[in-house]
Amino acid sequence: MGDPVSGNESSVRERIIALDKQRVWHPYTEMHAWRERAEPLVIAEARGSRLIDFDGREYLDGNASWWTCTLGHGHPRLVAALQRQAETLCHTALAGIAHQNASELAEALCAVAPGGLEHVFFSDNGSTAVEVAIKLCLQYWAQNGRPERKRFVSLEEAFHGETLGVTALGGVEVFRKPFEGVLLERIQVPPPREPRDHDRAFEALERAVTENVDTLAGVVLEPVVQGAAGMRSYDPAYLRHARDLCDRYDVFLVCDEVFTGYGRTGPMWASDHAAVLPDLVCTAKGFTGGMLPMAATLTTERIFEGFTGDANRAFYYGHTFCGNPLGAAVALEVLRIYEDEQILQGTRARAERIAATFRELGQLPGVVHTRALGMIGALDLAGEGGYLADAGWRVYDLALERGAYLRPMGNVVYVTPSLNIPDDDLDQLLAILVECVRAVAGG
Image (tube, rainbow, N blue to C red; front, side, top):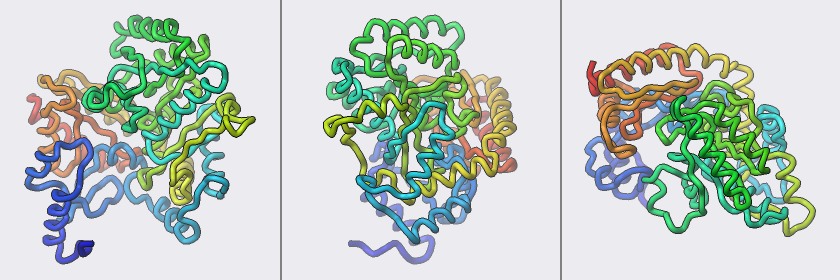
């Protein structure tokens, strides 16, 4: 085992980079290019809406560290909750054991969830939260009289995670293509991007459900906004249409709120825009405010009861850190902070400023399309290439020089800051965004 990283700041930074390039395999990264990159960003600490590198330079965190730090970095109440819990119980299995944090968190989560969601299954990240949901759907039908129901409907350009099960639901081909041939079958339908698309999209969804209802286990949607597709939004009427179809044909509606939940789009849940009750809701990311990996899948009483009555009907699935006391303590404190600090109410003025900025950027000659909803703002730069395009990375490099972290998705440049980002920080972030997009897009 090597020695821990130590020494003066310059040598520490150099050793971190050397070890990283020798040993660490980064997500979503072509590693030859990464190794050739001379100066990767090396973060030493984070506070509020800012990341701080080893040279002490600060960067505004424009995407809340992969959309997770909804309350910023190092919220003092979350740190205190973690410290308190660490003094008594860091971990225990949830199989055959109950503990206070998991019990109280499940109660609090059901209290803020759409009405009718009564039970909580804990896991450890967004992918597993959705994996739990699709396994619940499959097993429910298998042992409740419809074993032929093994397929799912999902949207084009969908992203629901990276475990092998949920990869099947995805529509971002760069993520899905390497695993074709070993995935569950899914039926893909187009979302309504523009008002003129609505009738076509509604009809496609209706055909998918009605023509396949005998083999359909569920409809899985990212409600209202598809994050990894490039922050693409759609009319809540589509979600209501999906709910009506699922009710009519007795198919489960799964809402993947991993990204959209916890106020990212305005209300607590994006499904609230449509006033629908999903059969299952998946949550992660903001669930612990970015402090610890933890997730949950919420279900109705009907689904829960479909697994009771016989040991053979139990849901034999779990994770080592399922219901982890540390994560549960932090997640419970997140909900308390949301209430005490009126987090959702505080996003309204910030959301308006984000929307105004992206409307302004939409006038530039090199910007094709802009959109904003809640604490999300996004634009498409002109050019081809999809997720692997490089125009957004030119904005990224310019923004990094100016003190902002704006990781793009190909030609899509976006911001998803913490919900409670201070006004001055938001103004600075948006000013950097405007300057860098203008430099790349003209105007």
